[in-house]
Amino acid sequence: RALRNRDGKQVSLPGPWSFPIIGNLPQIGDHPYLTFMEMRKKYGDVFLIRLGMVPVVVVNGMEMVKQVLLKDGEKFAGRPNMHTFSVLAEKKSLSFSVNYGESWKLHKKIASNALRTFSKAEAKSSTCSCLLEEHVTEEVSELVKVFAELTSKNGSFEPRSVITCSVANVVCALCFGKRYEHNDEEFLQIVKTNDELLKASSAANPADFIPCFRYLPLGVINAPRKFYQALYQFIALHVQDHLTTYDKDHIRDITDALINTCHNKHAATKTATLNDDEIINTVGDLFGAGFETVSTCLYWSFLYLIRYPEIQAKIQEEIGNIHGNIGLKSPRFDDRKILPYTEAFVNEIFRHASFFPFTIPHCTTVDTSLNGYFIPRKTCTFINMYQVNHDETIWDDPNLFQPERFLNQNGELNKSLVEKVLIFGMGIRKCLGEDVARNEIFIFLTTVLQQLKLQKCPGAQLDLTPMCGLTMKPKPYQLKAELRP
Ligand code: HEM
Image 1: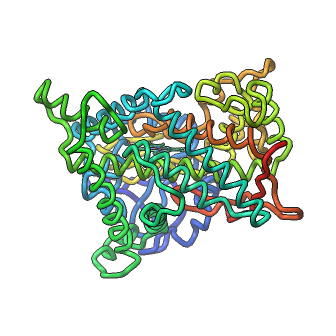
Image 2 (image 1 turned 90 degrees about the horizontal axis):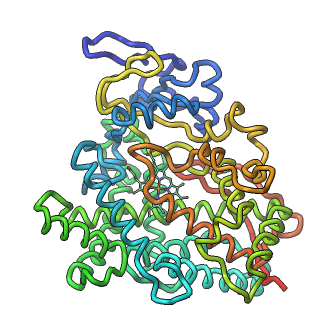
Image 3 (image 1 turned 90 degrees about the vertical axis):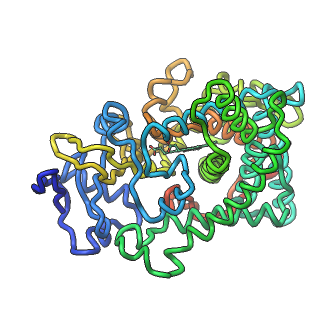
């Protein structure tokens, strides 16, 4: 269990006893974030476990998490060389590449700039403030229609695939300026491939924990590569098309914004930028990160809304007070400022469901120490965001779902409490899509609730226990969505 320092001396972080080869894998269970919360009681905020043969430092507690992600951010900003990551990163992924350094920093800056440039791109219609808002409002109208149709046809339906198609369409529009019909074969295949890729990557791949397994020609070990290649081809085709039709005075989407940033910067300063292959990978990163997370959040949100109908009614009342109900003006990004209860609900979903329980794994870039313990370079580190979101020293009754906790006495959003919710990470590796995600989720929720009443099937038992993965999903459930009178 012990790590070794540069002189080969053992350094013992606290942590549970582990088996040879399989390490602590049998003790981790289906909900590792809960197991680690239990272990924290015995070993403190920082402890060491072994996933198979790989030592992993687990970090809990807001102060220790801030230490790792902010104060010592640079020292913990790497990604571990796990088999699954290396498949995703072999073509220089921004999110998974193990090569942390100056060129990675430049890569992240370029991707952030492109996202920002695009977020400001002008809408085609005068009713929307920007192109992003226009895409989201168009997609949510389609989702409302499909939800109502499925209810009138079948009485109720499982909402996951409709949500995923709608959010994937927003991402397609963001990345490529193109949307697909929900029954388009090519589109459905890509949505499915992305889902398979995520499943194959986050289902404990044996090669991640017992390194010599990566050389075995087993389906389970090579599945991520197969799915990744299919996705890469889809994205590469779109990017190639953009490279030939790009016009610097007319930015259509993120791909154009990236081409613009890279080609302009290179022309103006002759400094390094991304080459076309790296552009393809960056679009791939944004594409993959942008739809799985947002659709998972909406899938949870609808479940909570039918589980807590009184909360649904309060959100509808808040929207109704501002916009009236169906047929009147539909919500816009700017309304986030004037719908504090709705904002509180979204933050409570982030906190309570904590559907992104750990950040993507980090890894030390240099020898360092934490909480008094030596940690060598290249040590895999898990940040337990779920624990912070359920820490009794921060949250009263953390297991209670209570959006009001984020409102002050005047009904305004308590911004300093909102900042304590940990779902996008923080520091150098922080998610760069937070603003896009918050705006998108807000429009989906408010538009759906303005127009539809969501209900569970009579007598249905709704289970809020998540199914584990890099992002956690609820178990399948049935939804009834009827147009509001
Ligand atoms: C990384 C959460 C939406 C792009 C991350 C990380 C988290 C996260 C936890 C890892 C942070 C770390 O490793 O320390 C979320 C959640 C979302 C969301 C909860 C929605 C509710 C988006 C969207 C985009 C995006 C919409 C793009 C349009 C990225 C990228 C990274 C990332 C590119 C990699 C950053 C890096 O490795 O430095 N996100 N994300 N995310 N996210 Fe998001």
